[in-house]
Image 1 (spheres, one colour):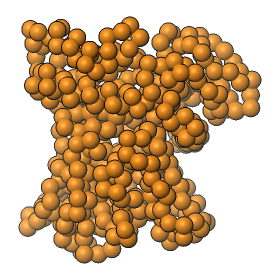
Image 2: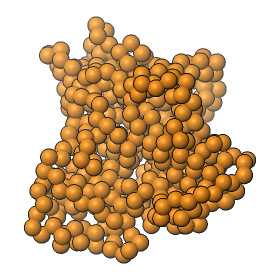
Image 3: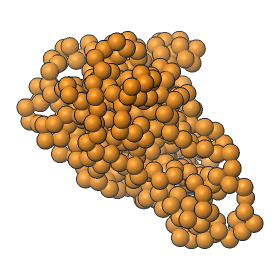
Length: 436
């Protein structure tokens, strides 16, 4: 099995199969990968939570989880299969495609993510990332800073493995944050920055009309962040006064209501635990005065904030209720699920969201490591299908949790939903995601 030494070579890599070679355009490179999964089976729960990767590591690092081990292996397998089928059906309905086709694509997506997880574990400082380009065509990009190793993707995958990228995932993540911060200082307005390793660039959206001195300031911005050499990451700066970055105003997926008003305020996401004390996640911008109601007509609990973060670790609030928080979340109004994993994901993959504003919807990941306003390390989706009241709600697929809904931002002239990934919980709160 061979890998590409330069961006000119395109290979179909298949596990245990001969290599097929074709051609691709110059400068092909993959977008960075995010979170990778930690799965703790019920039988191993006595060992306690896994040791999380320390803050500042690759976004492909495992998410720290703690298992209560209340569900048997047989029940868990059946439960996860049911959840998978429900989400596959949602995507099939939403995209008007046959369920069998969507199911096959999602199974392939899972295999791709397993290989992405393996690569992230072996090459945490050189992996640029993994992006699913097309489920239907089974096409994937994989990129590395330096020489690319051998990659084994599912049989039938159309894979491009690329060496010698200008930055690793961690370097590109930091550069994106630096670009957003310095652009805000230079232009004096809100800025969104989103990395695109496929084009070796960072998209920078500045919320104002083009100033007279824009060319000089853009050069200053590049020189102070990514550099100006021909092989460096480029900045694609767009001035758009209509661009926006907004928030959208105990089991996860619960309805959070404004005190004494009974109106939908936000949605809860997932349960967490620190030193044996459980709590619940929502968005920081949801505020600190609300009640928690698992579903309409259920007991309405008071909520008290334990900790919150709004910045490098995204938009998160940890709150407690008088009852015990459990490893469950709501995937739809009448679909309460057990949470089993906090799995990783690649750009381009499908996942779903639930919020009390407009219910359940599914979408594909567009960009990772997005910075907007004061926030960094957000995930941007391909579309904006959410609405007010969805803030703080869960992003998930099957029995796995991915993140906490924030709102929306504009990237490439299109509004896109954004959320805080669960790998920001440990650096923010020293807490684990609570799973079964």
